[in-house]
Length: 185
Image (cartoon, rainbow, N blue to C red):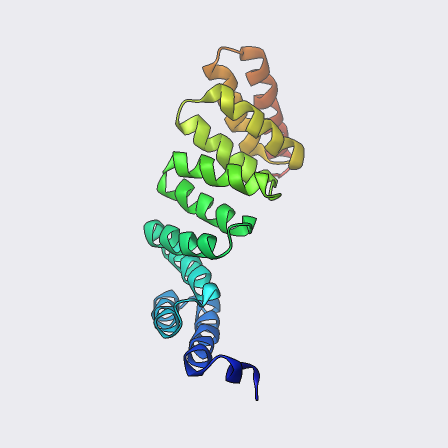
């Protein structure tokens, strides 16, 4: 008995659709991939990777609300996996749903996924909400993790200006110019 014989025809059919959809996604055929992934989910609603892949495809199409819905299913199935929170947090960021960004990237960081991007996007969300003093520590963490990221210095400079710290803003603006001259964009 093969691997799929343990589960039944629905899982085998869902897996075949999933693999075909992944190949289509790699070719940029997102609509066709989404169609197959939707069929895979109908065949086997517990097929977790189909939700994540479909969410990734929705992200590529700029359909952030649909991506958020599928990442939410992934998170319900894998609540201790930081990847789902990071991906959904970015979808919230693109949708400009900043409370969701902050919540998901906080969970992502707490689960051990504290990369430079997580701190940058959480800091950017705080900035969009005019929470400049809360943004600065996140942007500082982003810079510590990726000191060649001019976007983090630029955003932190804007936060310093917003709270009236012209000296720190000037230092960060100088660093942005230095990084851009060195080709770090």
